[in-house]
Image (tube, rainbow, N blue to C red; front, top):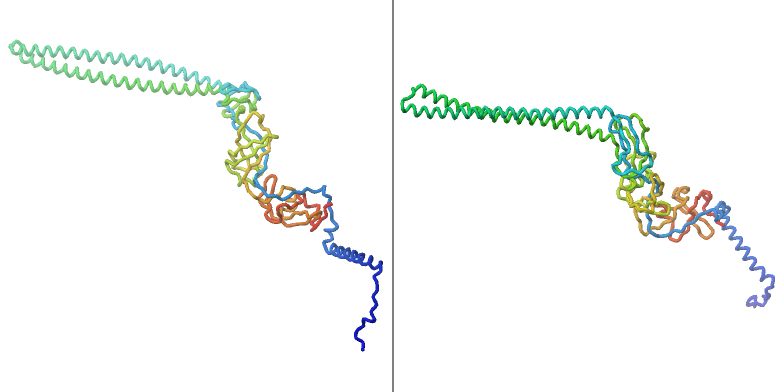
Length: 420
């Protein structure tokens, strides 16, 4: 009986050729598998490659995101009043554009013959009224003197009648005069008393009347004096003076031109106070507020200021805003000098962010290419707040990731691209 086939087995030694052949087969199998994997990927992803020098990269990091509005503007004088003609006439411009002027210095004059003649006529009327007032005062004194004279004469007659009455009392007792003469002396005394009382009342009434008339005349003189004073003010205003110390800006009319009332003549620029006038895109208008901090850049110099006013209207899709800031001699400011500015809206601490780049516009802010070694992989993203230099990353990235921040158009929507 046969137990097994072990007696039929023959042990063979492995040849050197078979030892070399087996690793080669494994290598070929690995290459075949790799080829199958690469072939299973998107054909464009494998075939597309971009030079590294043509791209820009940025690393995602955490920090404080300062949301701001980048804009430009210019330096304007905070106080640059325009001087207007107070009357119609011929203008003589004394100060030239660029000339320095002091506060109260005459910079132009207006020649108005009509106003000057009117002033002279009213001055003559005033002098005539003053003379009439003095004449009225003299007449009042004369009439008061006459009234006083009448009163004094009535007093003398009263004293004489009283004396006659007393003499009649003595004579009637001695029966030296008749009763008729006695009664007549009493009537004369009574009459003298009435005349004296009436003379006194007449004197008082005359005094009140003259005082009233003089007061009316004096008021007319005062009223005419106000007319003259106003005309003198208007004539004095024909000398146009600088309301501030600074320089002459521009002539707004020609030399010796005939101008009308309220027509602009020239501007005076106050060099002691400047402000920045910014042109902010209207899309940010609702986010602006008085008192917001603004960073102004004058070349290498940076100055902090705050919004002092915001225009209520939109012009050329922009909103005008004024910024007040501290000035110093190092800035060397000039009228209409250009500058760059940032309106600082808010500070966001501990934010995952990346530097700004063209990928935001070219990808609509919804996709980006993330580097994995030498492979750039298309990745959907969600962005948040934006500043002048950085953008908040909400979804699609982690701290330390490297993003392609240049335009994604060269990638042609490929899922993966080799960066060589």
